[in-house]
Image (cartoon, rainbow, N blue to C red; front, side):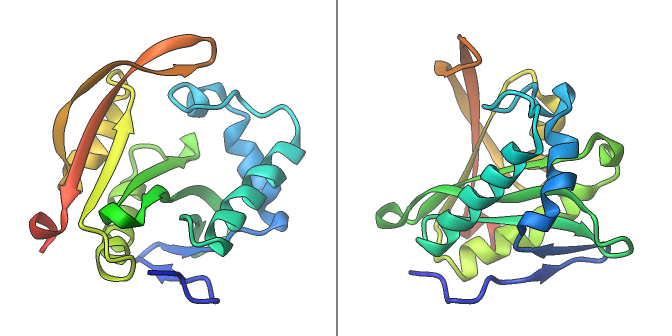
Length: 183
């Protein structure tokens, strides 16, 4: 399955999930420059807004090549991008993809990801023909773990020292949700 030419816009009660553009770089930089956001992320905290432009371009290129999709989470009231969520590591031949997300600390513990994950999971199963959506997270990142479990993901285990990030080997917990469990 390939994406259509037009980026799909999804909506929830409080948010519009849309394609990010260069004009959103300031807001993306704002949260990716915070160490508490990148603590469990596989990148260093941003120090220049150009890094936000680069990541937005990378996400959009993956969409254009039909390799993944990353939505900006825009607050309906302000229009401000407060985070992102989407799919990468899309293995079409295996009908699976990895989901990832982050949100600005000002919006932590406000149900943002619980609200946003539902239409994105639905899109994965219905529009991308996924059979499996998996997520990897640092075992110490209890907030991500809770969001994923609340969305119906099931813990599968811990991959010991499975990644080399920020100069150290680190464990990766893995969980997934299958299409049959979602339906």
